[in-house]
Image (cartoon, rainbow, N blue to C red; front, top):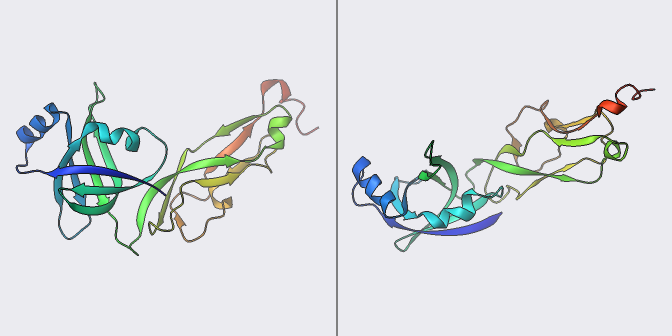
Length: 188
């Protein structure tokens, strides 16, 4: 799993007025949960660009005034109109303690259905999994080499080790759609 470092500063005062003042300076109020106590801090908004605007999953190394924490992004809140980052929640990661994350799906191989004129459609971009941070992969590879026209790969067909899938086993991940021109000829 990729790592990213975010340097933050302790928050002296909590509350709406203080949060608005922090945002006005170009910073984002944050909270770190899951440890012995909650840690309220703020960090420059530009540091979150690589963490939020990418499909990758990162382990975050939080450096808050010299104290380091290992964490994962739990939730990010954006303004509904201007889409400005308002608040970020982190979950502290402990060795051996399982966490729940959404891991990106990566399609591998060439489907025979695509070579026959079908369209490969990704139904799910991320899959929710549960496991220790050491066992969570960077991507979940989905093999599409066995997909013919009208067929799908479902969550239950994806081999995973050392992690637990939190999605329904019957949910499709990728499928081959039959184009309109071929609909009458398929199966003959």
